Each structure stands twice: as C-alpha cells, then as structure tokens.
Length: 166
Length: 401
Image 1: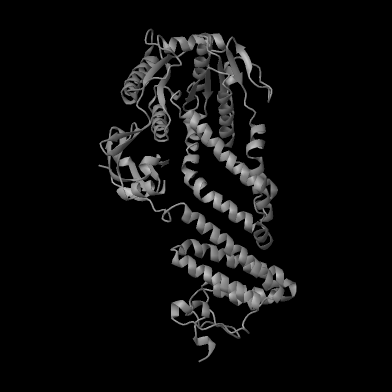
Image 2: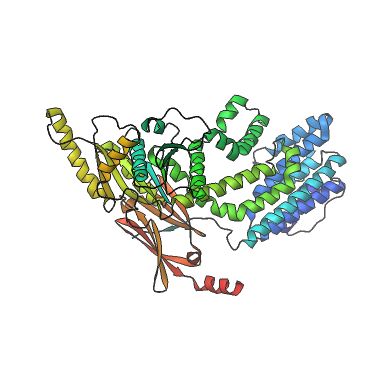
C-alpha cells in the first residue's frame, strides 16, 4: 500500500489507525509543531469547542503560511506561493488522496493541519523552527482561552432562545 | 442632584425650553448648570451670550445659572485618541489613504457621547443642584449608551481572556500578518471608554434623572416623539414629561390660523391621551423669540404654571423586578407599542427585547440568572416576564458559595 492511499497520521483517530508519520516527510521541529497542533485540535473537539477551535486553527494556518513565506525568503517564495494556491483550491477532490501537479499528495485539501503540513514541506528547517515557536505560543494561548471560557461556567452556547409572549 | 435631559425633533424649540427650565430652576435658588450635547446647538444664542471660547469652563449667565460649552476636541483626544491612532495604523498597513482613514475612524455620534462624558464629570463633581442637558434630536445617543450593557457579558467574560491571548501572540501576529497589534494602552483605552459609558448610563438612569420630550402639536413631529418615548423606555430611561411647544393662541384668529388651531386641538388631545400618565405641559407660540435668562425663565414659568419645574413626575418605573410567591416577575415599560411589535428571547444571562428597529440586551439581575423563563405576557404599556427558580442552578450556586 502506498502512502497516498492512507489517511495522514493526524487523521488516525477518525480512520481507526495509529500509524506514525514517516520522519522523512517533514523536518523534526515542524513535525513536532504539527503534532502539537493536532493534539490541540483533538482535545478541543473532545471539549465540544469545534467551531471556536476551527476558527483558531484556521487563523493559525494563515499565520503559519505567512510566517513561512516571510522566513523562507525570496528564493523559495515562488515555490511557497504555488503551495498557497493549492490551499485555496475548491475542495472538489476526495480528501486524503488529492494529487496536485507533479506531487503525490498524502494530505487532504481542507483541514488546516494538512494545509500546514503541505506548507511545512516547502520551508527550510530554520523557518520550521520559527513556526514551531509560533505554534507553541498559539497552543498555549488557545489552552488559556479555553480554560478561561470553561471557568466562566457552562456558557459555551450563545444561541438566543425565543420566548413566546401571550 | 437632579439631571434633566431634553430631546425632540430639530426645530421644535428644544434648546429654548431646556434653557428656560434651567433659568427657572436657577431663579428658584438652585445652583444650575445648562449644557448641550448637540454638536449643532444654539444654547449660547438662546442665552444671549457671545460665542464662548473653547475650554473656557462654565460661564455664569445669571445668579445661580451657569452655561457650559463642551470642548469636544479635547475630550476626543483623551477618550478616543489612542484607539483612533491604532485604527489609523491598521488602515495604513492595509494601504488605505491617510485622508480616507481619518474619516473612517471618526465614530458616528462620538461627539455627543463625549459631551455626555462631560455631563458625567459635572454631575460627579457634586457642585450642582440641577444639571440640564440639551440633547441632540431623537436621542440616538442615549440609545447608544445601552451599548455597555449589551457588551457587558463580552467585556466580563471574553475580553480578559482575549487580552491575555493577545499578550502572548502580539509579537508573532505582528511579524506574521504585518498588521500592527493593539498595544496595552489601546486596550486600556477601550476598557476605560467602556467603563465611562457604563458610568454615564448609570447616572442617566438614576431615579433623579429624567428625560423630557419636546414636540409641537403636529402629527409628523409627534410621531417622532412617540417613537422616542418607546425606545427610551425600552432602554431603561425615565421619561417624565412632554412639552408641547408653539401652540397658537385661540382668540382673534383669522381663517388661516383657525385651521391651524383646529388641527392643533386634535393633536393636543391625542398627545394627552397617548402620553398618559406622563405630565403634558403646553407652551404658547411666542410673539417674539425669548432670548436671555429672564425671558427664558418667564417662558418656563408660564409653561410649568403651579408645577415644580424640576420635580421628577411620578411615572411607571422603566424596569422592575418583584417577587410573586416563589417566582419573580420582571416588568419593562413599553409605552405606545402593540404586542405584535415585541419580540423576546433569552441568551444565557441576558434577556433580548426587540421592539421594531430597537433591540435591548438586558443583563439579568443575579437572582434571575438562576431561573428559567416560565412565561411572558404583554399588557398595554408593559411587558411582563415570569421567572421560576431552577432548582438545579440554585443548588449548584449554594454548593460553590
């Protein structure tokens, strides 16, 4: 079985597999960052904070993308821009088996982590280290935010409940 | 300390009657301050003063009567300057033309809000027995003051966390996005503006504060006054009287004026019945413009007659909570509204009341937060919401306390 037929390892829970990533895919620091982000996603989904977290994760992806673009410098910028275009592709193709151009993709087009990983493959180890720092800070901040919300009671829903007037 | 606010459609004589009430209050021995929050006001003209210098402070117009020209520019710089500068930086980084950016960052209604901050300072100073405020037409700003209440949940629960998150992320976001992140001073400025507005609102909704509507006996003008009365009540302000200005004298009328008199009589009857139980005072059409403190005081004396011009007229409380057996009944005064125009909802600790185009987000008193809404009932002039204690929530609170 080739990699392209398997879901990425951070989708493992959903697909019932705990296959570990191939260490050659991404730099160590960047890989750690992704792991960190994945565990945050998982933890937040368990806490019933999907929507909030999706927003934050998307923001983190944007941040990462911009950071990568900045850090990888002008020489690599053309390469990164190509990948960024892929990020905004219409999600028409089936996830986890998407093929883009010459690359055999092992990630989906839609989830922010996959987008992040695709991006990380194109950046230098130095940039990846910077991204790791950024993600660690994002994670800490997200955790803090969620703790703050949890501490304020069971008010995770903000839906207005209509009251009939007689 | 008595705070009186005057509002009404442009051109109905609002400034004249506000200044007149102030002049009369001063003549009765009250140390009185009159000021305007309307950017296009003519208070100085009505009082017969020369154009006041900016930043001059209160000017003594007559014995016990002081007038203040609010220097909004200075207030603007103090209250909004830091926030505006930040917005300018953001817009600049987004490539917006500086001239356009400047226009975009001027808050609509900001001048009036800042003038109300001046009112707050003067009231808090304790120097005055009566503060009379000539407000901008339609009292839009008073409704704007409901904003701190609407934002309270956000400011209490989410904002502190957001501040912490921003503290951690600021350098990264700045580097990554190229957009300047607000500095602590900006966040402080937002917090203090929020607290200031809440404080202004607290002063203006005290039992010693009330709004008086100024109208003329014309259908179009009174229609506006009716809407203002409804929305001010919705937002919790006490409206205690209506001044009907420019009433034609009945005697010696020619044909043209006789038609006006007949039309005004119809409108006056309607105003009396619609505004009940508010006090309705009538002001005759003057033969000459009343200018200067004496003429204004005389006009006001004629209008108020035997009534004490500054006494708060007893009217239904804008908002009450009373206990009915084990339950609570929350009552919101909504004059001149049909049941079909009212919509009600609950969101966590808030009650969301919508009347036509106006929506008030009401932060529930703590006792009601631990209750479920068991019903709502509309009767003319009033919305009643019944709350039943939720045993689960009371137990949880008892345990945690």
